[in-house]
Image (tube, rainbow, N blue to C red; front, side, top):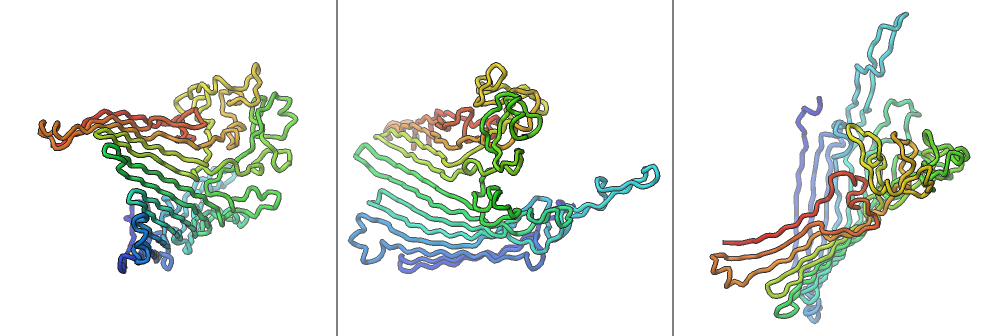
Length: 464
Protein backbone atom coordinates (compact mmCIF):
# COMPACT_ATOMS: atom_id res chain seq x y z
CA UNK A 1 0.00 0.00 0.00
CA UNK A 2 1.36 3.41 -0.95
CA UNK A 3 0.07 4.86 2.34
CA UNK A 4 2.69 2.79 4.20
CA UNK A 5 5.57 4.42 2.29
CA UNK A 6 7.33 7.40 3.93
CA UNK A 7 6.80 10.74 2.22
CA UNK A 8 9.64 12.46 0.39
CA UNK A 9 9.92 16.21 -0.16
CA UNK A 10 12.97 18.40 -0.67
CA UNK A 11 13.23 22.17 -0.20
CA UNK A 12 15.91 24.86 -0.39
CA UNK A 13 15.14 28.44 0.51
CA UNK A 14 16.96 31.74 0.79
CA UNK A 15 16.40 35.37 1.68
CA UNK A 16 18.22 38.60 0.81
CA UNK A 17 17.39 42.04 2.21
CA UNK A 18 18.67 45.54 1.46
CA UNK A 19 18.17 48.85 3.28
CA UNK A 20 19.53 52.21 2.17
CA UNK A 21 19.34 55.27 4.43
CA UNK A 22 16.06 54.14 6.05
CA UNK A 23 14.30 55.19 2.84
CA UNK A 24 14.68 52.41 0.31
CA UNK A 25 14.10 48.74 1.09
CA UNK A 26 14.31 45.62 -1.02
CA UNK A 27 13.84 41.95 -0.29
CA UNK A 28 14.20 38.80 -2.34
CA UNK A 29 13.05 35.34 -1.24
CA UNK A 30 13.10 32.06 -3.08
CA UNK A 31 12.15 28.45 -2.62
CA UNK A 32 13.37 25.55 -4.69
CA UNK A 33 11.05 22.68 -3.86
CA UNK A 34 10.72 19.08 -4.96
CA UNK A 35 7.71 16.82 -4.52
CA UNK A 36 7.41 13.05 -4.78
CA UNK A 37 3.96 13.39 -6.35
CA UNK A 38 5.27 14.39 -9.77
CA UNK A 39 7.35 12.65 -12.40
CA UNK A 40 10.98 13.39 -13.13
CA UNK A 41 11.17 16.66 -15.08
CA UNK A 42 8.05 18.03 -13.36
CA UNK A 43 9.11 17.33 -9.80
CA UNK A 44 11.01 20.51 -8.93
CA UNK A 45 9.79 24.09 -8.96
CA UNK A 46 11.48 27.45 -8.39
CA UNK A 47 9.28 29.96 -6.59
CA UNK A 48 10.73 33.46 -6.10
CA UNK A 49 9.24 36.60 -4.53
CA UNK A 50 10.33 40.24 -4.61
CA UNK A 51 9.47 43.16 -2.37
CA UNK A 52 10.20 46.90 -2.58
CA UNK A 53 9.38 49.69 -0.13
CA UNK A 54 9.89 53.45 -0.10
CA UNK A 55 9.59 55.37 3.19
CA UNK A 56 8.68 58.80 1.90
CA UNK A 57 8.55 60.52 5.28
CA UNK A 58 12.33 60.07 5.69
CA UNK A 59 13.06 62.24 2.67
CA UNK A 60 14.47 65.72 3.39
CA UNK A 61 11.74 67.45 1.42
CA UNK A 62 9.18 65.88 3.77
CA UNK A 63 10.54 67.48 6.96
CA UNK A 64 7.88 70.28 7.10
CA UNK A 65 5.09 67.69 7.24
CA UNK A 66 6.50 65.20 9.77
CA UNK A 67 4.59 66.64 12.71
CA UNK A 68 1.35 65.78 10.90
CA UNK A 69 2.29 62.79 8.74
CA UNK A 70 4.51 60.76 11.06
CA UNK A 71 4.78 57.76 8.74
CA UNK A 72 4.31 57.38 4.99
CA UNK A 73 5.49 54.24 3.25
CA UNK A 74 4.72 52.79 -0.15
CA UNK A 75 5.40 49.07 -0.65
CA UNK A 76 4.85 46.45 -3.32
CA UNK A 77 5.46 42.70 -3.51
CA UNK A 78 5.25 40.09 -6.22
CA UNK A 79 5.72 36.38 -5.75
CA UNK A 80 5.17 32.92 -7.14
CA UNK A 81 4.00 30.13 -4.82
CA UNK A 82 3.78 26.41 -5.59
CA UNK A 83 1.32 23.93 -4.15
CA UNK A 84 1.67 20.16 -4.37
CA UNK A 85 -1.26 19.39 -2.01
CA UNK A 86 -3.60 18.69 -4.90
CA UNK A 87 -5.94 15.84 -5.71
CA UNK A 88 -7.14 13.11 -3.39
CA UNK A 89 -5.02 11.46 -0.71
CA UNK A 90 -4.88 8.26 -2.79
CA UNK A 91 -3.54 10.21 -5.79
CA UNK A 92 -0.08 10.33 -4.26
CA UNK A 93 1.84 9.47 -7.41
CA UNK A 94 0.13 11.07 -10.39
CA UNK A 95 2.66 9.70 -12.86
CA UNK A 96 1.63 6.10 -12.07
CA UNK A 97 -1.60 4.46 -13.15
CA UNK A 98 -3.89 2.85 -10.61
CA UNK A 99 -5.08 -0.50 -11.96
CA UNK A 100 -6.99 -3.22 -10.15
CA UNK A 101 -6.35 -6.62 -11.76
CA UNK A 102 -8.85 -8.41 -9.56
CA UNK A 103 -12.04 -6.35 -9.76
CA UNK A 104 -15.20 -8.38 -9.35
CA UNK A 105 -17.44 -5.61 -10.68
CA UNK A 106 -15.77 -5.81 -14.09
CA UNK A 107 -15.64 -9.62 -14.15
CA UNK A 108 -17.34 -12.02 -16.58
CA UNK A 109 -19.16 -15.36 -16.45
CA UNK A 110 -18.53 -18.31 -18.75
CA UNK A 111 -19.90 -21.78 -19.44
CA UNK A 112 -23.29 -23.16 -20.40
CA UNK A 113 -24.70 -22.45 -16.94
CA UNK A 114 -22.67 -19.24 -16.48
CA UNK A 115 -21.28 -20.60 -13.23
CA UNK A 116 -17.64 -19.94 -14.06
CA UNK A 117 -16.63 -16.41 -13.01
CA UNK A 118 -13.36 -14.55 -13.42
CA UNK A 119 -12.57 -11.08 -12.08
CA UNK A 120 -11.83 -8.29 -14.50
CA UNK A 121 -9.52 -5.31 -14.72
CA UNK A 122 -10.47 -1.74 -13.76
CA UNK A 123 -8.59 1.56 -13.90
CA UNK A 124 -9.23 4.29 -11.37
CA UNK A 125 -6.42 6.61 -12.57
CA UNK A 126 -4.42 6.88 -15.76
CA UNK A 127 -0.72 7.68 -15.54
CA UNK A 128 0.00 11.32 -16.32
CA UNK A 129 3.68 12.35 -16.17
CA UNK A 130 2.77 15.94 -17.07
CA UNK A 131 0.95 16.79 -13.83
CA UNK A 132 2.97 19.26 -11.80
CA UNK A 133 2.76 22.09 -9.25
CA UNK A 134 -0.30 24.26 -8.94
CA UNK A 135 1.03 27.82 -9.12
CA UNK A 136 -0.14 31.09 -7.65
CA UNK A 137 1.08 34.51 -8.76
CA UNK A 138 0.44 37.13 -6.07
CA UNK A 139 0.78 40.89 -6.30
CA UNK A 140 0.29 43.38 -3.46
CA UNK A 141 0.48 47.18 -3.47
CA UNK A 142 0.11 48.98 -0.15
CA UNK A 143 0.30 52.42 1.43
CA UNK A 144 0.99 52.89 5.16
CA UNK A 145 0.04 56.24 6.67
CA UNK A 146 0.64 57.49 10.21
CA UNK A 147 -0.90 60.75 11.44
CA UNK A 148 -0.12 62.72 14.62
CA UNK A 149 1.46 59.64 16.22
CA UNK A 150 -2.10 58.56 17.05
CA UNK A 151 -3.68 57.27 13.84
CA UNK A 152 -2.38 54.49 11.60
CA UNK A 153 -4.04 53.64 8.28
CA UNK A 154 -3.00 50.76 6.03
CA UNK A 155 -4.53 50.34 2.59
CA UNK A 156 -3.62 47.40 0.40
CA UNK A 157 -4.64 46.12 -3.03
CA UNK A 158 -4.03 42.47 -3.85
CA UNK A 159 -4.41 40.24 -6.87
CA UNK A 160 -3.85 36.50 -7.11
CA UNK A 161 -3.87 34.39 -10.26
CA UNK A 162 -3.85 30.62 -9.78
CA UNK A 163 -2.80 28.46 -12.70
CA UNK A 164 -2.25 24.73 -13.27
CA UNK A 165 -5.27 23.95 -11.09
CA UNK A 166 -5.87 20.20 -11.07
CA UNK A 167 -9.18 19.32 -12.72
CA UNK A 168 -10.94 16.36 -14.23
CA UNK A 169 -11.32 16.95 -17.94
CA UNK A 170 -15.10 16.95 -18.12
CA UNK A 171 -14.76 18.29 -21.65
CA UNK A 172 -13.18 14.95 -22.62
CA UNK A 173 -15.48 12.57 -20.74
CA UNK A 174 -16.43 9.13 -21.92
CA UNK A 175 -16.51 10.05 -25.62
CA UNK A 176 -12.96 8.76 -25.98
CA UNK A 177 -13.82 5.41 -24.44
CA UNK A 178 -11.94 6.06 -21.21
CA UNK A 179 -12.86 4.14 -18.09
CA UNK A 180 -12.23 7.14 -15.84
CA UNK A 181 -12.06 10.85 -16.59
CA UNK A 182 -8.38 11.94 -16.43
CA UNK A 183 -6.95 14.77 -14.35
CA UNK A 184 -4.77 17.55 -15.80
CA UNK A 185 -3.34 20.92 -14.72
CA UNK A 186 -5.95 22.88 -16.67
CA UNK A 187 -7.84 25.29 -14.42
CA UNK A 188 -7.12 28.97 -13.98
CA UNK A 189 -8.73 31.40 -11.54
CA UNK A 190 -8.26 34.92 -10.26
CA UNK A 191 -9.08 36.71 -7.02
CA UNK A 192 -8.55 40.36 -6.21
CA UNK A 193 -9.62 43.00 -3.75
CA UNK A 194 -8.42 45.39 -1.10
CA UNK A 195 -7.84 45.54 2.64
CA UNK A 196 -8.16 48.48 5.01
CA UNK A 197 -7.04 48.61 8.62
CA UNK A 198 -7.27 51.54 11.02
CA UNK A 199 -5.81 51.98 14.50
CA UNK A 200 -6.25 54.99 16.76
CA UNK A 201 -4.55 55.31 20.16
CA UNK A 202 -4.71 58.53 22.13
CA UNK A 203 -4.79 60.04 25.60
CA UNK A 204 -7.91 62.21 25.46
CA UNK A 205 -7.34 63.90 28.82
CA UNK A 206 -5.72 63.22 32.17
CA UNK A 207 -8.37 60.61 33.03
CA UNK A 208 -9.68 59.47 29.63
CA UNK A 209 -7.90 57.38 27.01
CA UNK A 210 -8.97 55.21 24.10
CA UNK A 211 -7.68 52.64 21.64
CA UNK A 212 -9.85 52.00 18.58
CA UNK A 213 -9.32 49.67 15.63
CA UNK A 214 -11.12 48.48 12.53
CA UNK A 215 -10.48 46.36 9.45
CA UNK A 216 -12.23 45.60 6.20
CA UNK A 217 -11.47 43.09 3.45
CA UNK A 218 -13.28 43.01 0.12
CA UNK A 219 -12.39 40.19 -2.24
CA UNK A 220 -13.94 38.75 -5.38
CA UNK A 221 -12.94 35.78 -7.52
CA UNK A 222 -13.44 34.65 -11.10
CA UNK A 223 -12.97 31.39 -12.95
CA UNK A 224 -10.78 32.20 -15.96
CA UNK A 225 -10.47 28.70 -17.41
CA UNK A 226 -12.01 25.40 -16.44
CA UNK A 227 -12.59 21.97 -17.90
CA UNK A 228 -16.21 22.11 -19.00
CA UNK A 229 -18.03 21.27 -22.17
CA UNK A 230 -18.56 23.90 -24.84
CA UNK A 231 -22.13 24.94 -24.17
CA UNK A 232 -24.25 26.34 -27.02
CA UNK A 233 -25.38 29.96 -26.75
CA UNK A 234 -28.80 29.03 -25.40
CA UNK A 235 -27.16 27.17 -22.50
CA UNK A 236 -24.31 29.61 -21.88
CA UNK A 237 -25.69 30.28 -18.37
CA UNK A 238 -24.36 26.85 -17.35
CA UNK A 239 -20.75 27.92 -17.83
CA UNK A 240 -18.59 28.32 -14.73
CA UNK A 241 -16.12 30.48 -16.62
CA UNK A 242 -16.60 34.12 -15.72
CA UNK A 243 -18.35 33.40 -12.43
CA UNK A 244 -17.05 33.31 -8.87
CA UNK A 245 -15.10 30.26 -7.72
CA UNK A 246 -17.65 29.88 -4.90
CA UNK A 247 -20.73 30.35 -7.10
CA UNK A 248 -23.61 27.91 -6.51
CA UNK A 249 -25.70 26.58 -9.38
CA UNK A 250 -29.28 25.55 -8.79
CA UNK A 251 -32.90 25.73 -9.86
CA UNK A 252 -35.12 28.79 -9.65
CA UNK A 253 -38.01 27.99 -7.31
CA UNK A 254 -41.15 29.94 -8.18
CA UNK A 255 -43.45 28.70 -5.38
CA UNK A 256 -45.20 25.52 -4.21
CA UNK A 257 -47.69 23.66 -6.37
CA UNK A 258 -51.28 24.41 -5.35
CA UNK A 259 -52.54 20.89 -6.02
CA UNK A 260 -52.02 17.75 -8.12
CA UNK A 261 -53.91 19.26 -11.06
CA UNK A 262 -51.35 22.04 -11.38
CA UNK A 263 -48.58 19.43 -11.24
CA UNK A 264 -50.17 17.55 -14.17
CA UNK A 265 -50.28 20.74 -16.26
CA UNK A 266 -46.69 21.82 -15.55
CA UNK A 267 -43.26 20.74 -16.83
CA UNK A 268 -42.11 17.34 -15.57
CA UNK A 269 -39.98 17.57 -12.42
CA UNK A 270 -38.10 15.14 -10.17
CA UNK A 271 -39.67 11.97 -8.80
CA UNK A 272 -43.28 11.63 -7.63
CA UNK A 273 -44.32 15.29 -7.51
CA UNK A 274 -47.58 16.29 -5.81
CA UNK A 275 -49.41 19.35 -4.63
CA UNK A 276 -47.35 21.24 -2.06
CA UNK A 277 -44.01 20.35 -3.65
CA UNK A 278 -41.64 23.00 -4.98
CA UNK A 279 -42.37 24.30 -8.46
CA UNK A 280 -39.26 25.10 -10.50
CA UNK A 281 -38.84 27.39 -13.50
CA UNK A 282 -38.30 25.76 -16.90
CA UNK A 283 -35.40 27.99 -17.90
CA UNK A 284 -34.71 26.45 -21.33
CA UNK A 285 -38.40 25.90 -22.10
CA UNK A 286 -38.16 22.22 -23.08
CA UNK A 287 -41.02 21.10 -20.82
CA UNK A 288 -38.75 19.16 -18.45
CA UNK A 289 -37.01 20.40 -15.30
CA UNK A 290 -33.47 19.00 -15.43
CA UNK A 291 -29.84 19.91 -14.86
CA UNK A 292 -30.08 22.12 -17.94
CA UNK A 293 -32.31 24.45 -15.92
CA UNK A 294 -29.68 25.09 -13.25
CA UNK A 295 -28.40 28.66 -13.26
CA UNK A 296 -26.04 30.67 -11.04
CA UNK A 297 -28.08 31.51 -7.95
CA UNK A 298 -27.32 33.85 -5.09
CA UNK A 299 -24.02 35.31 -4.06
CA UNK A 300 -20.83 33.27 -3.54
CA UNK A 301 -20.87 30.93 -0.54
CA UNK A 302 -17.58 32.50 0.58
CA UNK A 303 -18.19 36.05 1.91
CA UNK A 304 -16.83 38.80 -0.31
CA UNK A 305 -16.75 41.22 2.64
CA UNK A 306 -15.18 40.51 6.04
CA UNK A 307 -14.91 43.27 8.61
CA UNK A 308 -14.40 44.00 12.27
CA UNK A 309 -14.31 47.05 14.52
CA UNK A 310 -14.07 47.90 18.18
CA UNK A 311 -11.73 49.14 20.81
CA UNK A 312 -11.19 50.09 24.41
CA UNK A 313 -12.21 53.19 26.33
CA UNK A 314 -10.62 53.85 29.71
CA UNK A 315 -11.41 56.21 32.57
CA UNK A 316 -8.90 56.33 35.39
CA UNK A 317 -8.68 52.70 36.62
CA UNK A 318 -11.73 51.44 34.68
CA UNK A 319 -11.79 50.19 31.08
CA UNK A 320 -14.44 48.83 28.71
CA UNK A 321 -13.59 46.85 25.56
CA UNK A 322 -15.92 45.90 22.71
CA UNK A 323 -15.22 44.14 19.44
CA UNK A 324 -17.65 43.44 16.59
CA UNK A 325 -17.08 41.21 13.58
CA UNK A 326 -19.19 40.54 10.54
CA UNK A 327 -19.39 39.41 6.96
CA UNK A 328 -21.36 40.46 3.91
CA UNK A 329 -22.19 39.54 0.33
CA UNK A 330 -22.59 35.80 0.70
CA UNK A 331 -25.32 33.18 0.43
CA UNK A 332 -25.76 29.82 2.07
CA UNK A 333 -28.23 27.03 1.46
CA UNK A 334 -30.32 25.19 4.01
CA UNK A 335 -29.95 21.42 3.72
CA UNK A 336 -33.60 20.25 3.82
CA UNK A 337 -32.59 16.64 4.37
CA UNK A 338 -31.05 17.53 7.73
CA UNK A 339 -34.11 19.32 9.12
CA UNK A 340 -36.95 17.25 7.64
CA UNK A 341 -39.38 16.15 10.36
CA UNK A 342 -40.98 12.69 10.66
CA UNK A 343 -38.08 11.07 8.81
CA UNK A 344 -35.67 8.62 10.42
CA UNK A 345 -32.19 9.44 9.15
CA UNK A 346 -29.74 6.75 10.23
CA UNK A 347 -30.43 5.94 13.87
CA UNK A 348 -32.35 9.08 14.85
CA UNK A 349 -35.40 11.01 13.80
CA UNK A 350 -35.16 14.69 12.96
CA UNK A 351 -36.96 17.00 15.34
CA UNK A 352 -39.71 19.36 14.30
CA UNK A 353 -38.46 22.93 14.05
CA UNK A 354 -40.89 25.60 15.12
CA UNK A 355 -40.43 27.32 11.75
CA UNK A 356 -41.74 24.18 10.00
CA UNK A 357 -44.61 23.74 12.45
CA UNK A 358 -45.64 27.36 11.95
CA UNK A 359 -45.32 27.45 8.17
CA UNK A 360 -45.84 24.38 5.98
CA UNK A 361 -48.10 23.45 3.09
CA UNK A 362 -51.07 21.20 3.87
CA UNK A 363 -54.44 20.36 2.36
CA UNK A 364 -56.03 22.63 4.95
CA UNK A 365 -53.57 25.45 4.36
CA UNK A 366 -52.40 25.57 0.74
CA UNK A 367 -49.90 28.36 1.28
CA UNK A 368 -47.78 28.32 -1.87
CA UNK A 369 -45.11 30.43 -0.14
CA UNK A 370 -44.93 28.46 3.10
CA UNK A 371 -41.44 27.80 4.46
CA UNK A 372 -41.79 24.00 4.20
CA UNK A 373 -43.34 22.00 1.33
CA UNK A 374 -45.80 19.21 1.99
CA UNK A 375 -44.90 16.97 4.93
CA UNK A 376 -43.73 13.44 4.17
CA UNK A 377 -42.19 10.46 5.94
CA UNK A 378 -39.77 10.01 3.02
CA UNK A 379 -37.28 12.39 1.52
CA UNK A 380 -38.81 13.78 -1.64
CA UNK A 381 -36.28 14.03 -4.46
CA UNK A 382 -37.96 17.08 -5.92
CA UNK A 383 -37.83 19.14 -2.73
CA UNK A 384 -34.18 18.36 -1.98
CA UNK A 385 -32.75 19.94 -5.11
CA UNK A 386 -30.32 22.88 -4.75
CA UNK A 387 -32.54 25.86 -5.45
CA UNK A 388 -33.43 29.41 -4.51
CA UNK A 389 -36.11 27.97 -2.18
CA UNK A 390 -33.41 27.06 0.34
CA UNK A 391 -31.12 30.03 -0.38
CA UNK A 392 -30.52 32.50 2.45
CA UNK A 393 -28.54 35.70 3.03
CA UNK A 394 -25.32 34.85 4.87
CA UNK A 395 -24.55 38.39 6.08
CA UNK A 396 -24.32 38.98 9.83
CA UNK A 397 -22.87 41.23 12.50
CA UNK A 398 -21.70 39.73 15.78
CA UNK A 399 -20.73 41.27 19.09
CA UNK A 400 -17.73 39.01 19.52
CA UNK A 401 -16.10 40.22 22.74
CA UNK A 402 -17.02 42.43 25.70
CA UNK A 403 -14.83 43.06 28.71
CA UNK A 404 -15.14 45.42 31.65
CA UNK A 405 -12.19 45.72 33.99
CA UNK A 406 -10.89 47.57 37.00
CA UNK A 407 -7.28 48.00 38.10
CA UNK A 408 -7.14 48.93 41.80
CA UNK A 409 -4.69 51.60 42.94
CA UNK A 410 -1.10 50.46 43.36
CA UNK A 411 -1.16 51.41 47.03
CA UNK A 412 -3.95 48.87 47.59
CA UNK A 413 -2.43 45.75 46.03
CA UNK A 414 1.08 46.55 47.28
CA UNK A 415 -0.26 46.09 50.80
CA UNK A 416 -1.33 42.58 49.76
CA UNK A 417 2.16 41.76 48.54
CA UNK A 418 1.14 41.89 44.86
CA UNK A 419 2.89 43.51 41.92
CA UNK A 420 -0.34 43.82 39.91
CA UNK A 421 -4.07 43.22 40.34
CA UNK A 422 -6.99 43.33 37.93
CA UNK A 423 -10.67 42.44 38.34
CA UNK A 424 -12.73 41.88 35.21
CA UNK A 425 -15.91 40.47 33.65
CA UNK A 426 -15.95 39.33 30.03
CA UNK A 427 -18.20 37.65 27.49
CA UNK A 428 -17.61 35.99 24.10
CA UNK A 429 -20.22 35.64 21.34
CA UNK A 430 -22.66 37.93 23.11
CA UNK A 431 -25.15 38.68 20.32
CA UNK A 432 -25.63 38.38 16.56
CA UNK A 433 -27.74 40.38 14.10
CA UNK A 434 -28.90 38.86 10.83
CA UNK A 435 -31.94 38.59 8.57
CA UNK A 436 -31.76 34.81 9.15
CA UNK A 437 -33.12 33.67 12.51
CA UNK A 438 -33.48 29.87 12.45
CA UNK A 439 -29.98 29.41 13.89
CA UNK A 440 -26.67 31.21 14.07
CA UNK A 441 -25.99 32.45 10.50
CA UNK A 442 -22.24 31.86 10.88
CA UNK A 443 -22.97 28.12 10.93
CA UNK A 444 -24.44 28.34 7.43
CA UNK A 445 -26.09 25.13 6.26
CA UNK A 446 -24.79 23.23 9.32
CA UNK A 447 -27.33 24.84 11.62
CA UNK A 448 -28.27 21.67 13.47
CA UNK A 449 -24.66 20.89 14.28
CA UNK A 450 -22.91 21.84 17.49
CA UNK A 451 -23.86 25.49 18.13
CA UNK A 452 -21.47 28.38 18.54
CA UNK A 453 -21.08 28.84 22.28
CA UNK A 454 -21.46 32.02 24.32
CA UNK A 455 -19.02 32.23 27.21
CA UNK A 456 -19.21 34.49 30.27
CA UNK A 457 -16.31 34.97 32.68
CA UNK A 458 -15.68 36.73 35.94
CA UNK A 459 -12.07 36.83 36.97
CA UNK A 460 -9.25 38.23 38.99
CA UNK A 461 -5.66 38.43 37.82
CA UNK A 462 -2.95 38.83 40.40
CA UNK A 463 0.84 38.91 40.05
CA UNK A 464 3.13 38.32 42.96
